[in-house]
Structure formats: structure tokens, C-alpha cells
Length: 119
Length: 111
Image 1 (cartoon, chains in turn green, yellow):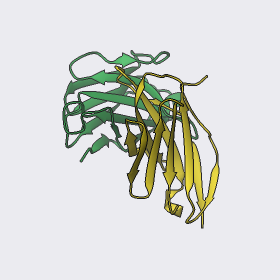
Image 2 (image 1 turned 90 degrees about the horizontal axis):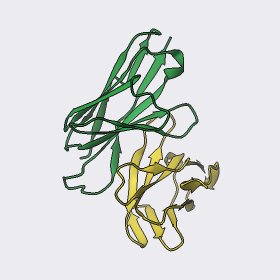
Image 3 (image 1 turned 135 degrees about the horizontal axis):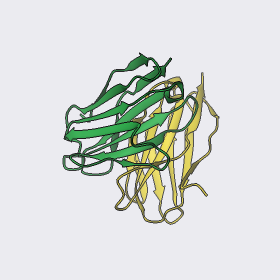
Image 4 (image 1 turned 90 degrees about the vertical axis):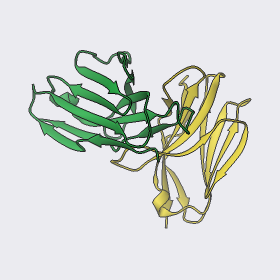
């Protein structure tokens, strides 16, 4: 149980284009999902928290108009990197929390991540 | 002072020995504590959660929590080369949705 998937696992795009990353909870309802970014040899950096049916809460310094987050259902959240630039190249990881199910606690389960390269 | 602090390592332990990973946190109202393992190039994987003072054992892993000292640790018994990874300590404050992560400790198990 507690499986989170991400798609795609890797993507290469040209500078100026937009990329959408999907995060799905496969065996539980995720009322809250989180999006992280990790650069090589650095710590996880939380970008935003998204709650189903409401606007995402962005961390300080993260541009909400550049990183669009949608959490339209209890099993799906999407992150769209708009007008991507080479400096956006990173490892993007989502996580999900099962607030109302068996795991009624604050455990977060991570997806496998999406490696984005912007050329 | 960082909210969650870990020794970044690297920590080298011989195969078969006990690896001890430590974490301190600054916010006294923290209520949930987690250890994640992250292999190079992969996403974090939850290996232990602990919510009350004392020890919690799961296979070769033991988490220890001391809220008075604001200290949480992870012991790995009979260390294997496959345990070589970065271990992340994460803390959740009461009422908060997000976890606060330490910077991680890189552990190397030497055959």
C-alpha cells in the first residue's frame, strides 16, 4: 500500500516550452500533496503544498505563476513548469499524505520523481 | 539554528556493525518524526515513523525518540552494503501539514 506514481519519469524540453508532471496516489486518497525540487547533491526543497479542491500554498521564493499546481481530485495533482529555462532543470518529486485512511497520521509517501532537463 | 539538524557525514560503518544516525530539532511542539532513506538518484522512501518517547523497532531498524532532549535517532543493526544511502530525518509540527527535513546524513557501509 501507499503507492505514489509520477509521470513522466524523465523529460527533456526546449527552453520556453511548458512541461506538465502528474502525481497520482494509487491505493489511497491523498487530500494533501506536496511538490519538492532537488538539485544534485542538495537537500529536498519544498515548493508547494496542495490540498484537493483549493489553491496551492507556495513556499517563499517559489513563483506561483511559473509553477502551476492543480489538485483537482483526491488521487491526482499536477505541476506545470511554464516557460521552462535551463535553470529549471532539476529532479521534481511529489509526495502524498493519507489523512483519512488507515494511515491517519502525517506520513508522507513519495513518488519516484521526474527528472527534467531543459535545453 | 536550523529547525532540523543532522550530521551530514559521510558516516562510514563496517558491514555487520551498528550504524547510528542522529537528529535534533528545535521546535518543542513537534509531534511526528520520520526517517527516510534516499538512494542516489532516487526519491526518498519512508522507513520509520515514531510519535511517542522511547524505542520503536522494525526489523533491523530501531527509532529512538526523546522529546525532552529534542532528539531522534535511527539505529541500523547488522549493517549491509545495501544500507548505503542518505538518511533524512523529518519532523512535523502539531497543526502543520508539511514536514521539515534535515539536510540528510550520507551513510556508507564498507564490506
